[in-house]
Length: 262
Image (cartoon, rainbow, N blue to C red; front, side, top):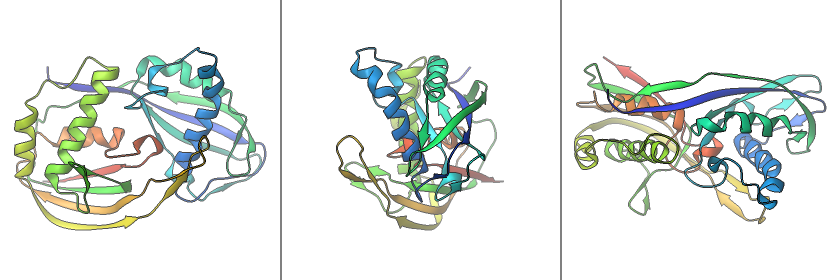
């Protein structure tokens, strides 16, 4: 059996007790800040908590772009997703969000209603020949090649960043790093051609509630098409639909969608 990635996708449902406003492009950042506020007293007390809440790569990502710029009226339910890779931390994460009392730009009161989800296992071995595919960069995606931020998602760069993220998540929260030829994987990925690129840069900033400093969490959005020997890469890209790729994935950045074109 080949490599795999395990996670637990969770959907949290809350009810607004007062009007809740989510900043445009920053719903994930708002939720991550709320989680940090809940956990900070625990960390200060020396009680720690699941490792995925404290150190990188973070053991979870938020999926909340449907809340960007949205106003939730009092009495209305709303939801968001968390993809949890630190699968042993499910109970702790649910307990933490159960303590959430206020949210949004104006700190409106909220009430926890329910959570749903079940474990998911993603196999990373390609089984079908694929020669063409499209990748949509749904939320701002920042990729680096070396120390340089790239303007275009060349396949060799994209595939290597996906590979490294999955391997890092497995090493920290799963059975260990990928059992693959990393160099060979990268060399084969570099031979895949990008036949179309329609991306644009989107500037987004967040403000740290701890330091008050502003940080860029922008990146490119749009889509790109690729052609070549893609069989081995498709499962990794499918897994990246759950993990995100690039920087700031914990806030929901780097969300991609893959369309295989046979």
